[in-house]
Length: 483
Image (cartoon, rainbow, N blue to C red; front, side):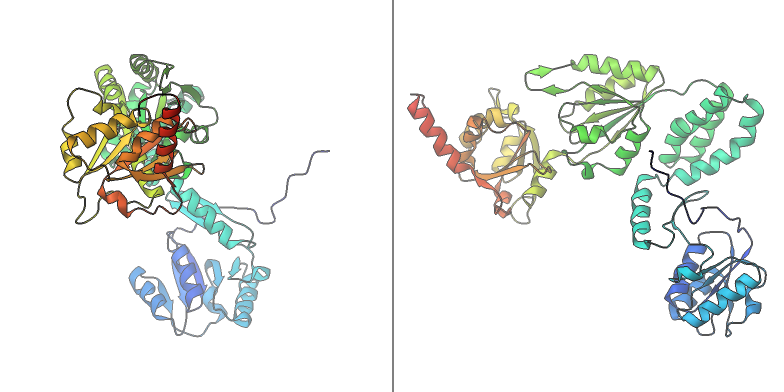
């Protein structure tokens, strides 16, 4: 037998309060909290307190709220559309509640649910958009926690965008027939050029985009967001990245992006893996460029999800150039790059006053040529070097840097699966680094950080690389291989 849907004991509504009186009885912290809440609306606040505390008095002066500096009397409630009993005194709050009911005015008594006609929600304010979260008084802390999560999800530009939408409502109803045409307009309005312009802080451009959209009634142009997925942990994804994932029609993602992050997108979004792993490329870069252009021309909202930061070894430059040449709109959303996540895992200062004041991001393959890259000179002069994708060429990285003059005793930190619960950390010196190549047990992405600043890391939860160097040497000797 199907389980019955739980019934609400308090039904949520939005009460019109513009220009209406809302009375708050009390002079302390509870009254101030309610005053701040109602102060987010256009209601006319009436605060009854014969001796308000300093902070409440400051609020009254700053906001221009009406202050009745007298002991409470039922006459103070007359004409109000809502009443808050917030004195902190049970007897007085009960009296206020009884007077309000006698006058037919709904009342809320703070922290006294048995006296309440209504409960105040935790409020997410993007006026004119509002999201109210209630627990019928059972869990105010839970409501506040949920409010915080929802608040982080919603763009600050949502309110101005909704206000702009309200100004176009009459024109849309006049010019567009009911049904698909009108729905498509509003879908394109909230998910297309007007929304992007408002998000970028360009309200005039958003207005012009809405005018163009209404005049042409053409399908929305496509938009590609090159989004950094971060190093792997879901809670390191940026808020903007999460919002775009929730709006995307297509999610085009790399192999190193965890499924848990891809799954944060819209449930009905189509997911297209185009990943590149060493020795296994499902699509060439040219094919990925062509796919993004095709989706953009079809008017799709696309998130091109890249591991780490899209501008750090993410081939974003090639994709941006292709999109520019094709006239497809795009944006870049930065992510936490693996070097920063690995440094955080080690509590490692990437720059350290008096030791290292510069950084180098590179891949191990930069050292495979006949000549040293220019950044090698920086490493020798004290820069911290972050090496991406360097496990298979660790010996060559170490050998070339030592040959160039970097001390074999230079500190090294290595992290596999940075930021994730299954991360592994290793520490040692540049002389120990070649042992990484023999580590068949390292299957995840590996980040190597080299430099004197590494010596300031916390090595308590890491394994020494030196032990693996000796194991590798012993194995090589047994097989008759020169180490």
